[in-house]
Amino acid sequence: MKIMTCPLNGPRNITEFQCHGEVHHEVDPTTASDKEWSDYLWMSNNTAGVVREWWCHTPSNYWFLAERNTVTDEILATFAVPADGPLGEVK
Amino acid sequence: MVFALLKYGMTGRYPARQEIPLTPELQPHYDVVIIGGGGHGASLAYHLAKNHNIRNVAILEKGYLGGGNTARNTTVIRSNYTDQRSIKFYAKSLRLYESLSNELDYNMMYSRRGQLTLSHSDGVSRSLRLRADAGVFCGEANEILDRKQIKDLVPSLNLDIKGMPILSGLWHKNAAIARHDAVVWGYAIRACERGVELHQRTEVLGMDVANNKVTRVRTNRGDISAGLVVQCVAGYSSVVAKMVGLKLPIRSYPLQAMVTHPVKPFLDPMVSSTALHCYISQSARGELVIGGGSDPYELYNTRSTLELKEGLAASALELFPFIGELKVLRQWAGITDMTPDYSPIMGQSPISNYWLDAGWGTWGFKATPASGYFMAQAMANNRVPDEIRPFQLERFDRFDLVNEMGATAASH
Image 1: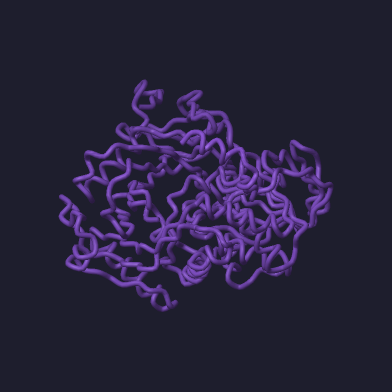
Image 2: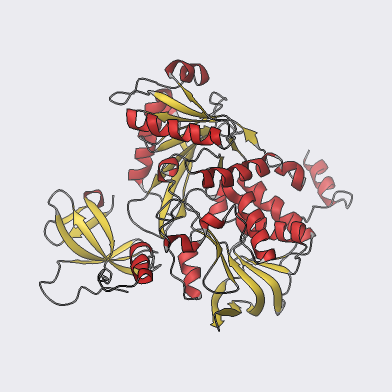
């Protein structure tokens, strides 16, 4: 069993969590070109290494951020969404 | 006995066959550089050399021949997809597989078993009907079976699974299994006989791109230049594409599978259930091959997890309750490059001399002969043939996807 530490609920079994993908830069659909928009919809960095992602603790529906290494399968850090300031999005 | 063996081993009359040549020196230039020495890379090299007389070809493999996802799949070969474009492509692959042992003079242990895909709900029954009819329309043999026919076909199957009884099934009688190692070995041996160089333990570290062209491939054994470069690196498509500055619509997940200890033959067809996320076949050795659970989050790691193996075992037990006594003999995971529409990415990339054979998710093994056949055609003529044109990367810009999610997810 793998344990993830939820910023709200503390250490829990990873099966209680859902991953919602990398924190990435949102594109404005009103100004984006067709190419920018299709890239935004389909393309993925799919990084082999450290990624910053959205996760959700499903029983409590609590959303937070996590840093994870996709090669070693280690969870490096989990933290609450900052009230203001950048989320550390990637392009 | 021991002495006889020793005598046999010492005598020069029975030398060991060296079918796959030792890794030669790296030349400064090749007409075609294939990154990735798996089934797809070897198949592409073979078809380039045999069908198009392009022999100055190097396959660069960072590990050993066929040591990646070619060795990590569950060897299902079938063509019962939904979209006509996919059905025709995979049907070609099935035809090539049928004659592959003869073509390569190498025993693929090709075994036509048929595949039974089970439905536990009206919705799935409708989608199976669609797949059956779409297949028949394209000339592939498919039929829908009712409960009695399923019972006759697989008497050991438990039809009355609690809460999700089996309602009907899609019978794809030409589905088969083959020995995955033999496929890549066979292609590599025959390609090397025609002058292709196989460079094992040769890792591509980076690529130089100038004027929208790959000018240099940097490896751990030195730099080379190439007329054309193609990547056939299932599981690392995004990583290698990044070396030339390309971003792909791929997310990589491990897919886990396992094998039980061998038992007497009782299961001829492959049986799969999308609702249970499980498919089972019995290998020629008698082992039950049980796949395929996808991990819930993206990962480049082939570890196994207890949760997924437990889930697979639970599903397998619903279908065949009497296998509870069997022990798991081996377990593994392979990295699957999942695309949004569950179809591969083949053809040209935005970089003029760089070609893509990527996004092979959980459908790569069955496509090994056809992908090499058509990719060789495309690269030799610098024109993508109609059969793989729908699978080009630019389909995402046109929103012209080839949706095979229903015919692919966990159903192999």
